[in-house]
Image 1: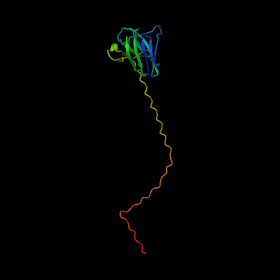
Image 2 (image 1 turned 90 degrees about the vertical axis):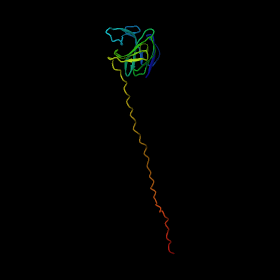
Image 3 (image 1 turned 180 degrees about the horizontal axis):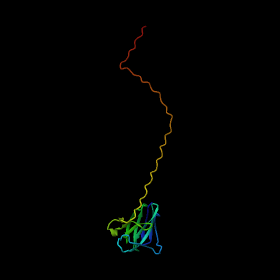
Image 4 (image 1 turned 60 degrees about the vertical axis):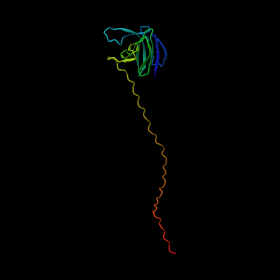
Length: 174
């Protein structure tokens, strides 16, 4: 099933279709979660304010974190198989997909940073992205035998061979 929404600011949700994306609130209170910047590989730890969504897909729960500010505007589309599209982004440069325990799966660099299309980055230490199970083939029902009709055979028609020359009958003596 597909899901889409528009995030405005850090908590404004509009045009939400579907029920796979749910905005979460931090336990400490407030509107944003403080997450370690997933794109920095340095020794120093820096934190960023994020709007975090629970994503229900493939029979599990995942987290989608949007590095957001009060000026953030982005349309998020989800296809139900952990594939995302982001449109019309303003004041947001990075979004990440995490497991429910906040282990990174992949992150997305939006056009304001990438200078073009949305760029998907799979870090070296990332958890493998779950793959949807292939649908089981539906067994085809056995062909139904046609009702057996009584077979009627027609008797063979005798074949008569004709001579090439006409045969004259002998006249009987009178």
